[in-house]
Image 1: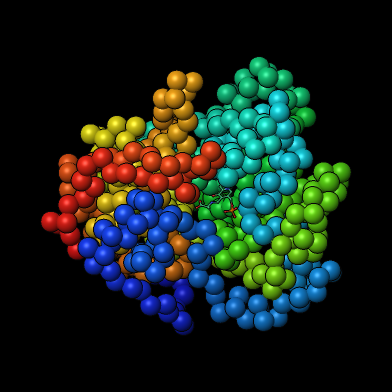
Image 2 (image 1 turned 90 degrees about the horizontal axis):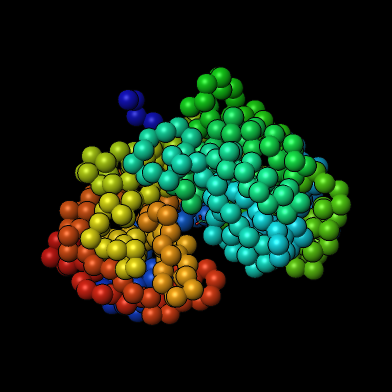
Length: 466
Ligand code: F0G
């Protein structure tokens, strides 16, 4: 395969801070073995998230200077609206400070007790906003999506048979909206095919139910369609994106991902009444309709970012660089979710540390070991994030135990990625000595952000340390 190079050069750099193994032991203990509680200065390579961690382009930084900071009717809003409408085609575009603010507004209007909202797989904040409204969040991933080692083109697809069963079983009146998350973050960053988007849309509309995309990584999803779905090989990504949105009645969006910015998002829809209600909530909770909790200059950066993200040389590099890390790990025998997704490589903790049971959080054990060993920060996407308790207080584990290595956009170079691959492989070679953790403190919702852990045994030996 020919080398695909970073389609940019670097104009400004940020210094990294190296720590020693003994420093990291102290720092991780002080953070209660939860890397969310580490100071980022103490992290060498930060793979916690691809959200809001993008390096903006020189053109985006200069667009910031051109922001029109008017409270109402800002020129920057109209530029943002024009770009978002061009891509999505939606009638109403409501800016928000990030994705979950759009979710909060949507579900406070359409959620509520007795309601059910299906998705291929809900992201944690989406699920939380639905549940906080009193509604039920249901995941309907296709069966392939739940088998990490299985290679398939569109493991993010929703199971449309299960969707129809749910609608018939519960009655369409209980389902205010059907969602589809592109790419399917929680399911391994796997893409959804155009055929599946179309099929879910057709089912939703046959029962009179609105269909919304959770569009955070729409451009990465579209590039996968171009590369994998017959008939799209020579269709420009922008047209693929427009087709994806054409099947939906609205979307929630975190621009912190494929908007290529550090903050921002939107809620968009075609329904006039819902839009009016949403704008009223927005004014109370986020800000006026032409800025929604953002500095107006942020809207300029999003508008520019949305143009840059559709550059196919960027998207080819993006998907290829994630795959490069996956390939290197597979070469070292490390079990990962296959094929690699758009924004992250996911380690399969069940196969990585089969001796650690779900009750001892195998993913969190790997997360801690990677930090101790190499200063790399990652996140558990398994029973810490999605575990529940049954009536007897026993853990009901998540269906998969994953560790996500999210790759910030345009931030790390190939040698950073080589370092990550080496370090993860070294921890994998030490896997027999890893042990699990117990939870000492947890919040009632979204516990993974603030949970405090206690190691059950040795988390990782310093003997093989860097
Ligand atoms: N939907 C999906 C699929 C997401 O991945 C996220 C955020 C959100 C909604 C919420 O957006 O953060 O702007 O409020 N995902 C980040 C992550 C946090 O690390 O995957 P937000």
